Image (cartoon, rainbow, N blue to C red; front, side):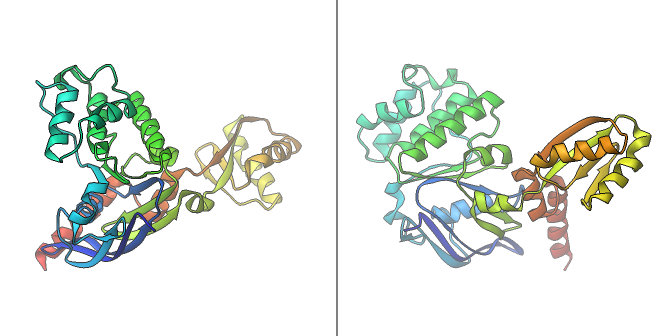
Length: 317
């Protein structure tokens, strides 16, 4: 049974369609990335799935239960939406104890979740003394209190330094290894690529891709980037590459040849036979960010401008 399904899910705010007739499935188990440019409708979709807001049309399920009845699945779901908020004067343990009491959960679970997130030994420290990364860990601990089958995290690494991002990444992978499904919304594509098994991509509320990361990356382009020792030799290098029938593109003094990394020696040989010395020969493959930009067609800044223009156009109509 899929952990999440949507069927024509739509949410409008006035003239703006934040989520536009999306249909996808999230398989059970593992880490699933939910990505899209800023303003794509990721947070709105998550709120729809958790029953925090109602759909304009369409429907969905969470753990086999309809999203219109969140009381039927809420006890099996843990969620961290936006930055976690805790009482600074209370210890980590007491913050979690209060949350457990509100949800009718046993306080025996508190020690378990503190260990899962790596805060054992800091449970008696006041939340106000925690770094941002530790507060994120405490937020994830709070989401894990009901021992959920599905963990939903909206931008869990937002504002963290590189070390904190790696810590959270490793934590989420470990949580998923326990058989849970972890849905992570994020705009940090490098981190998403490092941790997820499956991926859902949306843009302006429309679904662009739903499936495995492996399948999406089959569209990745392999290249070998070469640069001649002397800039004036670039036409000769291009001619040598053309003679082999290899497609290519140039940027400045770099020639990107569309061949696989294991063909790098062939390119070096062709250059040598043309009497050229290369000062650079570097294999390169598209990463998730490259594939993402091919799907969405622009950078986040350009997409934000497009989204603003879309709103302005509706305002004028």
